[in-house]
Amino acid sequence: MNVLIVGAGNSYPVALFAKYTLHEEMSIPSIEALTPQAAIRMLNKDNYDINYTLVIGISYSGKTSDIKCVSEICIKRGFPFVLLTGAKKSTLSNIYT
Image 1 (cartoon, rainbow, N blue to C red):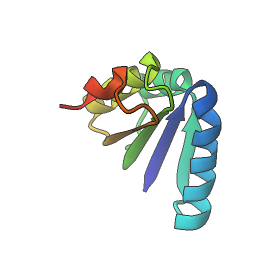
Image 2: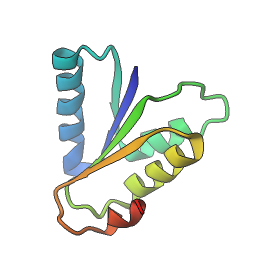
Image 3: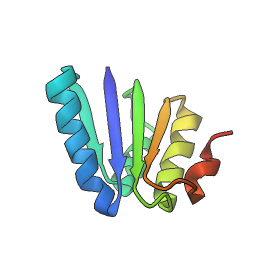
Image 4: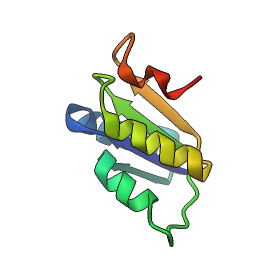
């Protein structure tokens, strides 16, 4: 199982905590946490060959445009993407139909 957690700004520490928790409590061996910019660079590489079982985007504000970019890349590459946000109605809510 390969999991990627992406968080920007104040959501990045939450991504690190989620990484630690999933690794320790659920014994997920292959898990990483990145900023959206790092994830975008990594996922856009032509020779990138890791297939993620799940990509989790975290945006407390729900207004992080880079998280939307990550979700679009994941959809294009066929990676399941889950968005976690603290905002009831956010600008990222239109990611899913």
